[in-house]
Length: 172
Image 1 (cartoon, rainbow, N blue to C red):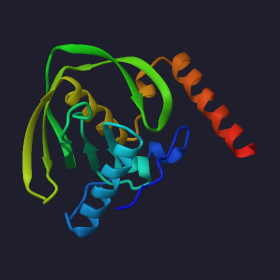
Image 2 (cartoon, rainbow, N blue to C red; image 1 turned 90 degrees about the horizontal axis):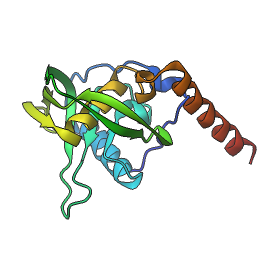
Image 3 (cartoon, helix red, strand yellow; image 1 turned 60 degrees about the vertical axis):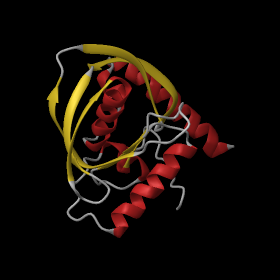
Image 4 (cartoon, rainbow, N blue to C red; image 1 turned 90 degrees about the vertical axis):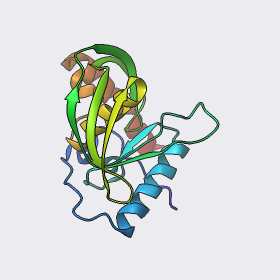
C-alpha cells in the first residue's frame, strides 16, 4: 500500500465533481486500500478519492478509531436515499482543511445505497458520527467542502488562513 498526498484547500481540484466508478476492479481496490492507509496515517475518520486527486466516487470511512479493532467501510458510488428529519449540530473538521473546525448542522441519520469493496450492491442505515462522516465525504464527491455550508465571512476567514499557511510553507 502507498501513502497518498492529501490535497488541501484552497486547491481548485477539491471543487471538481467526481464521476461514478464503472467497474470495481483491482485498480479500484488498490486505490481504496491506499486511501484507507492514508486516512489512518493522517489521522482521520473519512477520506474521499477527490481529496487525493482522483475524481471518482470512492470513499473510505472508519469511525471506530477509539476502539481496539478497525472497522473500515468502503463506499463506491454512494447515494443517499433517505435523510432523517432530526438535525444535529456537530463540530466538523477535514483533512483538506487542516486544523480548521466549525459547527455544522446535518441530518442525524441517513440511508444510502452503494457498492462495497467487491462491487456488490449494499444498503446501509447510518446514524450519529458515521452518518455525519459519510455526508461530509459525499459533499467532497460533489465538489463541496464543509466550509461551503458556512457564512461567506466564516468561510473566507478559514480559507484565507489556509492560503497564508500554504504561502508560508512555499517560502520557507
